Image (cartoon, rainbow, N blue to C red; front, side):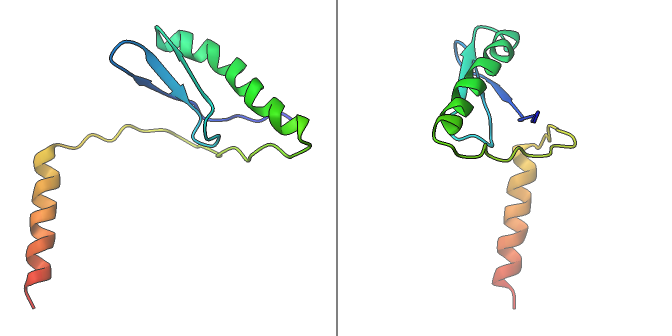
Length: 91
């Protein structure tokens, strides 16, 4: 059975790091996002091999439909928090 696990790639100070949200502790890294992607399959294989050796089923994979990056300005958060705090004080 083929499964597709989402991989998140983040930029660090010196390298890129990747992790699978569905698989705690399953991580990889590389000098470029492309290298992280290439290394991810090996990391995933080693992680899932442990489940096979213990006779356990693989963890379910998130059925991601789409991924989006949502941008927000700090001022938008502070405005929302101020309004929320004010409304709680009023009765």
